[in-house]
Length: 138
Image (cartoon, rainbow, N blue to C red; front, top):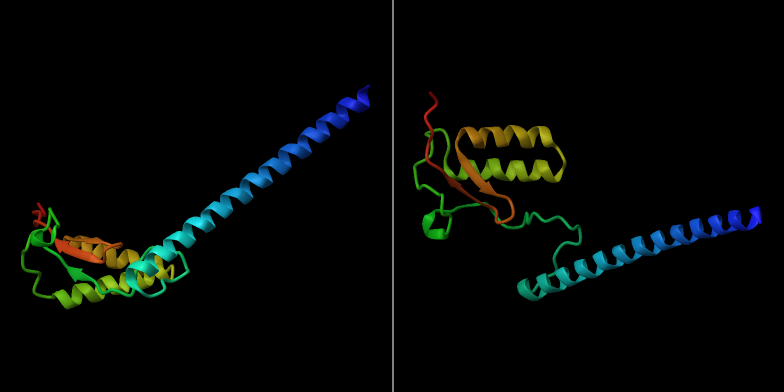
């Protein structure tokens, strides 16, 4: 009788292992289907194929400054520092995006620190940025 309980335990263990494997395969299939639907919907909207990399950052569009009139509620249309122009900020953001894409987080963090000091707020997904009210450094 001892053999039967051992066989039952092994059978249960094998069943649980197979069930877990089926669950993992099912989740992977669902993810593939969702990704395929996302790609199809992007193709329908843009008329051109999107990248299959799964990278959520769209590096094909350029960074742009937005203001309150563009829907950025907290944006303040203040002039930039003398050393920085809109083009210079865009270059910094491009450099940051490229560094993140290449997983060079040291460079990315340096650029982020500069942008924070300039009090620039940015949205990676929309590739938009705006200025905010300057805080006193007291």
